[in-house]
Image (tube, rainbow, N blue to C red; front, side, top):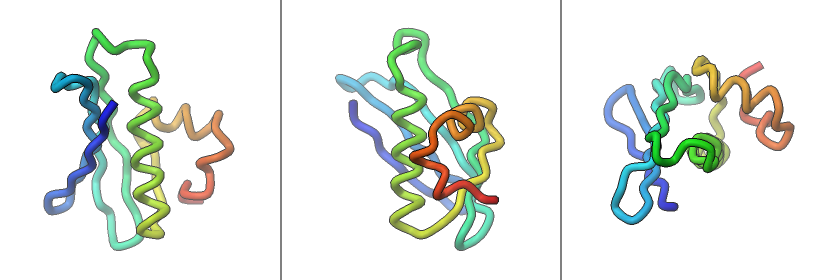
Length: 94
């Protein structure tokens, strides 16, 4: 699974691809130099149940750590993973 993160203006996204086929996407808004807001997660039906959403979130978490920024997970999926996974709470905006 390949995950690419791109930003353009005030928006960003992580896209997952496997064998040239889009598996899913997670989008976020850039709310400042030190904050992003994850607002949407979408997984293609062929990839449901394969952990694509979690891989997308973890890629964004890694990017946030590298840039020393915090995350607000407005997206219900991202919020639910943050509640369960203690290993990523260091980037959660308090």
